[in-house]
Structure formats: C-alpha cells, structure tokens
Image 1 (cartoon, rainbow, N blue to C red):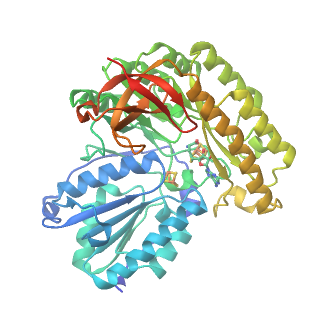
Image 2 (cartoon, rainbow, N blue to C red; image 1 turned 90 degrees about the vertical axis):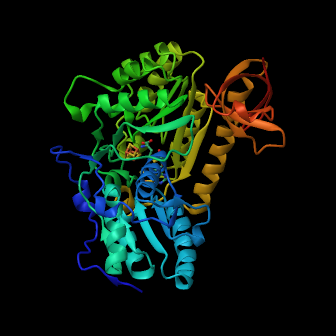
Length: 478
Ligand code: SAH
Ligand code: SF4
Ligand code: F3S
C-alpha cells in the first residue's frame, strides 16, 4: 500500500457547519500546461452515485479528464483511472459504495498502476474518510469543493506514489469555465446553485456541499443559450433548494425571474429540481403557468404530513402551508403533475403521525414519490434523537405508504389515456423490441412502437393507448 501524503487533514463537520456568507470564490477553470498530457494513452471510468448534482459534477470531471488526454472506458476493472463520485445521503447509499471499493481493492492488487479516486460527498464525512484511508487502497481522496484540482491531484498521485487527500470543509466555491462531457445530446443538467443552508435535522447535505451559493444569472443564461445553439431540447436546472436562488447574490432577482429569462432563450423544455416548499413563491408558480418552456411537473418534497415531525425535522412549513401551495399550483396550472419525497420512521414518529402523512399523500394527489426509511447520519441532530420504533414497524409503514403512492403513479398515467402527449425521445426502449421511449411534458415515461433512431432527441406526438403503474404506452402520430 502506498504511504500517505504528509498533508492529510480529515474533514470536519463542525467547520462545515459554519456559514460565513462572505467571499464566495468564483474559480475560473484554467489548466496548468504542465498537466496537459497527463492522461495521454490512458483511459478512465467514473462511477456516479447519488443525486443529479453528482451526475452534473461527473460530467465536469469527465470534461477535465478528457482535456488532459484521458479517453473514456466502458470497463471499470480494466481502466487506468477509476473515480467513484460518491453519495452518503442514507446508509444504503454508502453500503453500495463500500462494495465497489472492495472489488477495486482486489483489482488493484493485480494492477498496481491503476489509480483509484474517491470524490463527492462521502469524503466530506470524517468517519468515511478515515475508513477509506485505513481500509481501502484509494490513491486520491477529494471532496465536493475541489474537483477543479483533479489534474494536480492525479499528477501528485503519479509523482509522489503516495495517497493524496484533499478535502476542504469550507463553504465551497463556484466553478466556471470547466469543460464538460455531457451524457446526452438532447437533455442537459445546468447547475444554477450549489450547497444548502436549510439544515433539515436528518440531512447530511449542508455539511457535504457547503453554503448556498448561486451562479451569476448571466453565466446561467449564457450556458442555456449555448445549449440551444448546440441543439439541446431540454435543460434541468439543478440545486439542492433552487427556490433560494439569488438570495446570496444580494440583488433583487429570484428563481422566478430566472425562469422568465431562460424561457426567452428558445430552449424548448425547462425542468428544475429540487424545490423547498417553504421558499416556493408566487413568482415561480406564475412563471410555471406563463412560460411555455417550463414543464408542468413539479417535484416538491414534503417529507412528512405531521406538523410536530415537520417541526423537529426543521422543515419550516406546516401541513396547511404546504397544501395551500399545492392548491395554488393547481389553480394556476390545472393539469400539473406533482411528485414528492417522504421519510418514514423519523425518530419518535408515532403511528398517528404517520397517518397524517398518509392523509396528506391522498389529499395532495401525488403522481409519484420517492419514499425512504429514515437513516441516521452521524453528526446530524436527528442522529442523537431517541428512536424506539422497531425496524419491522418502519418497514410496515413504508409498505403502506408505497401502496398509496403507487395508486398515484397509475392515476397519473391513466389521466392521459386517449390523449396525445409530446414526447422528447431518449432512445430505444428496454421494454420490448421495436419500441422507443422518452418523457412527456408531465414527465411520464412513454413507450411507443418505432425503430426510427433518427427520432432520438426530437419531440414527437404520441397517442396514449395503455396506462401502467410505471409507464405509458402509445402510438406515434403523424
Ligand atoms: N435537497 C433536496 C434533496 C435532498 S436528498 C430536498 O431538500 O428535497 C433527497 C431526499 O433524501 C430528501 O428529500 C429526503 O426525503 C431523503 N433523505 C435525506 N436525508 C435522509 C435520511 N437521513 N434518511 C432518509 N432519507 C433521507
Ligand atoms: Fe437536505 Fe433539507 Fe437541504 Fe434538502 S433542503 S438538501 S433535505 S438539508
Ligand atoms: Fe448524495 Fe451528496 Fe447528492 S449526499 S444526494 S450526492 S448532495
């Protein structure tokens, strides 16, 4: 095993919690010529776990790697450089990653020249980083705030033959001008802000991603304009709480303003994720109703339907306040499709409190939800709250919740039976030979009969003939 670099400093959750709100650094990516050919003749593979934020970061890291000569590989176990862009949102997210690390450990024994890098959210956690350093053979460990330093970290790992650890527990920065290798040529992620200041008591994200910091509106608009020029049809605006966009910039410009401005760029479809219910404002809802390109689907995580639980979660809204926004949304956009995230088994949640969540799910008429059993995250306030609910009880709640949520998925598809929907074609469908698929405006996965690959990236009309729980089937119209 390689010896460790002397300047190892473990991340600190305490430091990561500090919000100074000053001096957010914008880093303009600038490649030092000495790293220009570092990856020449070598290939790379990136494993991406977690949220869309990580997917967007992986596209940046792929861009940086290809910019120094690396070529993408499709075989992780036989690559010169393997990066794991990790997630630690719940315990099971981490367990999967420990499994892959175990496999790579074996592979590295046979191929000592292989470089393994661990990045993303896990290295921002002190206990995970310690475990990685002690028990796994990773060469480079870096966090979410220093992906622009990748060439330097790789260089040091090759040169020093020692483990390179660079994890910063600061408020983070904004990276502009880095190259990107986008996964798709018709849909693109556009990060509009980074970090989170909400500190929901169960959540690790504010510690791993730093303070809320918005990109300048001009840079975002320019990126979308360039995507339009390059033929992209859809952008998804990304942030942990996009409704807080602009708050840190000290200008009178909010997320709603940004939607109106992006609508003028000529992009056909705009989606965004994630919205915090407290910050979802009238201007944003109006923009959804008035801007043709803003799609009629909203993911609005509720987490719980019980006011006491919402309070201990630090969500800063109530059942009633949340439902008021849902009613307003339906008033402005009558056919809107709304989805959500829900946690069951939060410490101390009683059966009655869980019943409030079930009640809200019925009332909100969700057309989908990601459902989770609460997972304690070391260092977060909820992890030290007493929790006496047995595991089986939590699973039982989850199953009852899923049964209700699944009715919503089906209902959300049935409402389009016999109607013509506009589908942005992604590619061949895994649902059967001779089928293609894509998403409708309401974000419904739609399969239709066709073998015409020239449709990929185009928006086509499909008449819905069958509605299933997880997708719709239809026929291509002229
Ligand atoms: N910023 C987004 C997404 C955060 S992570 C938001 O606020 O909605 C995605 C989802 O993971 C959360 O909405 C929440 O439902 C879930 N989650 C976060 N921490 C969790 C934990 N400790 N245990 C279980 N689920 C969790
Ligand atoms: Fe986590 Fe809450 Fe921030 Fe979402 S808003 S990332 S759940 S702290
Ligand atoms: Fe996971 Fe980090 Fe995203 S913990 S959900 S990858 S912000």
